[in-house]
Each structure stands twice: as structure tokens, then as C-alpha cells.
Length: 180
Image 1 (tube, rainbow, N blue to C red):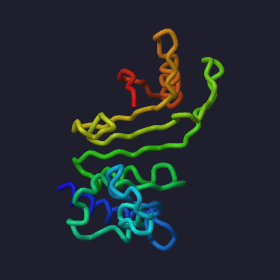
Image 2 (cartoon, rainbow, N blue to C red):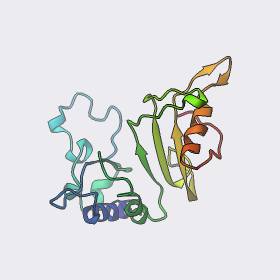
Image 3 (cartoon, one colour):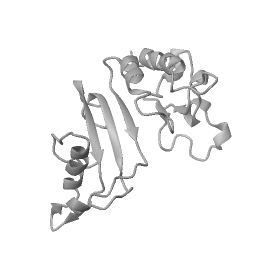
Image 4 (cartoon, one colour):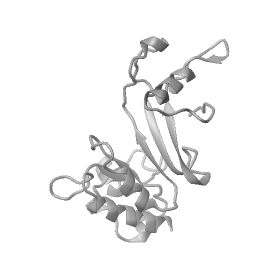
């Protein structure tokens, strides 16, 4: 079932407006999973293209190519806000999935005593799960707000920053802090 979903994702991204360049090719690169030391010492040019990274049009079309390579990651840059979430949701259906926004910069919050930062500034959108490990399927979605951890005297000093960030967009943090 997961392989079929990857193939559906491939087709959805190939057709999705905003996720494609001017010639209809999906932006970014798809990479199949590999083990940490699987290709240790193997020159990059001798590693399987699907593991190194391919564009959507070069994704394998046969199910066997996905064996041992799930989950597949898709890295893109500079997509317009709102251009991919709906297509991604439709493509993965009831399966688990994740969208990460990395390399962000949190704003200053001088009234709350916060200084903007880039370290660990991320947002993760989890589909049909509540864990980054994607190991606990649910029927809903979750958003994780990542801030730098700073523990002094046994107390987490940065958690209020996550609450402040959520409030800036009219939301509230509903769960307890997690270490990633």
C-alpha cells in the first residue's frame, strides 16, 4: 500500500501547479531512504540515483524500486505559501506523512523578552500521526513548533517562546514539549 501511495504522490506532484517549474517538472528532489552506512566509501556517482536524489519525472514507476527505500523524502525550496499542502494531503490519503519547514528565522518578541533566532527554527506538519517517527497513526494532523532548547536549573526556558510564536498566528500550543 505504501508503494502505491508513493506512486500516487509522484503523479500528484507531476500535475500540481506551483510545485512544478515552467516546463511542468516538479521542483526539488526525491530521495529514497538508505541506511547510514549502506554506501559508505561508494563514490556519489556510483550510488543509485533514487537514493542520491531524482526529480519527479525520474522517480521509479515499478513498485520493486521502492522496496526498502520508504519513506521517500522530497526537498523543495521557495514554493509559494499554500502551494503543496492540499495536493500532499490528497496524495497520501489515510497514510502518514510529514512536511517540514526548515531554515526559518523566528521573529523578535521584545515585549515578551524574546530575541529572534534561526537555531532549530522549524515547523513540522504531521499528517495522520502525532510523532516525527511516523510510528503512531491517528485520524488527525498535528503541527510541531520547534525552538532551541535551553534548560537552566532544571527548567526549560524556551518553551514560552513556542507559545508566544503560536499566539502570533492566533493559535495555542495544546501539547507538552517534546525533545527531538
